[in-house]
Picture 1: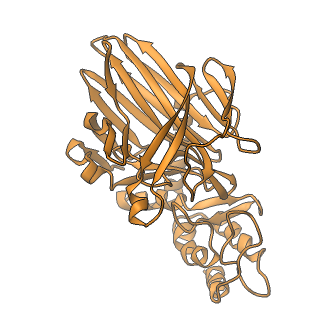
Picture 2: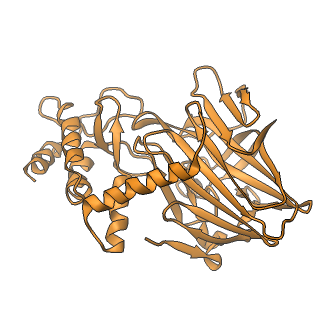
Picture 3: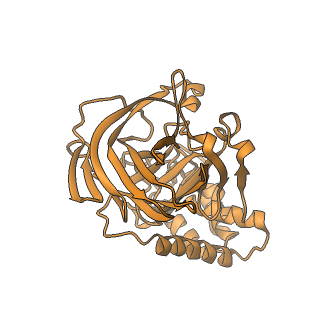
Length: 372
């Protein structure tokens, strides 16, 4: 499968309008644009579902990279503020490809930086892998800045007095408690060291939120940075998670996800490239519901939950046409178990309260799905 974009398309005018999405099967996701600019409040590297598939929080907005090549600084992050672009890393972008994972390829003064993003299925964990091709053996020092947060994914945050308490597990791993009762954020690397240097990134601008008539500026907390010095080619990863990180084998994680996707394609049995893309896209919508211990269907990204009517309409295409019959049974069981006076729930709420029963025909759609 192939979806890619070259340098002529990796511009603010074109690239900021093309988005990618990764999901983790829990309702959590990662998403941004092909130039690395976050244009929505829903963009980020780790939007975790704390009570799958709902209660989603933006925990890590992005990783921004500064490279010093022979002591000359190159900024690879792309961020817009009120007056325009504060960082223009898109100028170094050579290529973006979507499959098998979102991958940015930068070229800077004879050095290639390949940045690949994966989500671990079934976990609120994102891995960002860096491969540096430095054939000329130039002096290279990398600084990677995590922009973190801890807010409902429907909201935006301004600089505040959250303590963001940091506990160093070792010199490559830190545990961050944004405030009392908040989920902890774990940041780690297999090779790069972490340096404590707290600050705020102020006034990031989301033009898609302004288009929607909503607050469009946000501040993110920067706890410090990862750093690595080299005079050769390098590979390393940075892990972002809601759970303690025992280690990171990027190749194993990437291969596991490739094998999982290949198994879905084999199960569906289609050879056409476009249809295979649809099969994998269908997988993004099938999630675990913690309250039932069974599968459910997310009604859409970035902001919908699992809606009963939408789930029943989509179920044949997402599960029956793709050979996922056990998932179809679980999804039907999820909604059937929550019926009330003959009504199928139309929506499970983000906060986990009783579902909303405000659809007339979802029960009829359920019977139609059962008949298929």
